[in-house]
Image 1 (cartoon, helix red, strand yellow):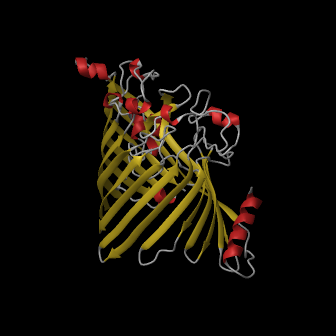
Image 2: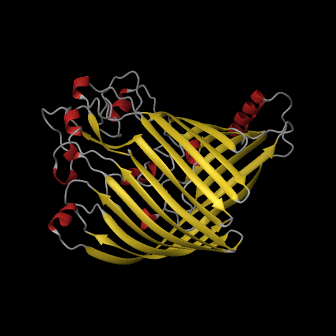
Image 3: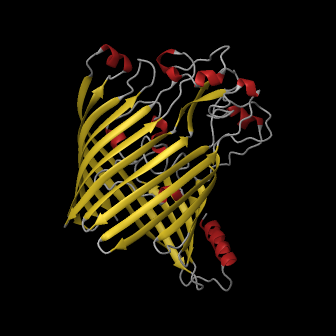
Length: 452
């Protein structure tokens, strides 16, 4: 893999710049990363179901302690060729047991301020965003959902929609991609990235011309919304483009950081039947529209004081789940990442101490198709899919509000003690009474963040 990476980046450099391109020194690997170890107390509402809120049933409050951690080890290397081109690589290893062993893995080619990236990495719009300052455990694309569990329809896509973040991820997190960043001119920089599909870590491409792939359908598994025999199969989101631009400058004591971003991706192409039987005009003929989203962020600093905020809107989000529609061969999108979110906050630093206060608000839309009880999807015989999807009574929206105050003490280089006191409220309009969906509570969390 190392030989392939070096060969690829060398060819790119050779194509951009003429002349001999020998490395003065071979690539040398250095080790870095971080470790977060948290301990806290949390109290949240258990049993706050829709029926409980309607009937006035008293909910049960739980008080519990927990210890959580998040750590990564980074292997990075770089060398400079005789013609000035820099070749580098990064591999990020998850230090906690999980399904994703390698977080990100990519190679870089840099010259005169230009930066080309190829591999598994976040998109340009994500990397160039700014948000509300926070010195605690993190709440924008953060950890509050780990302490105050949420059972709404959008749990699977929490970090891919505005319910949980204003950073444009929208499903392409760490997907295999190529990126290009310009030099920073007069404070301005632009970046653009392209991912052929949402696969990560070298997985096989999704554009497979086979009956089996089409039959697996949109969401995977038997009974998907595909029909065997299509000659143009895309059973996953594809052709994902993200773009970002930011401006960073300082005017005497005033510092300014401004960012905007845009992300889009083509919806799965699963031709499954007659147009009359599909949910056209609502989420697209095959259950989902092309993704369209944008974001903006602003930070303003004066001395030791910093204020900032951000916003993200996903007009057409990624389909998170599918269920039966009016056709036996077509599924409709039952939960998406469509929605909007924003945050605002402030931070003040005094010597080794820093304090911050912030607020995050996120919303995410969902759709329940059919009339099954307790949120169970059911086919609607004789009813057009568009009519079902447009039924306001079938819609289910999720909402989050988080208020947080955090304190940080820098004990030494790369050694920080952090504490956060936060209140989080998750509200779900998911139909049914059989499961705990909404949740609210507060938590006090303290611990160490070590970087090396």
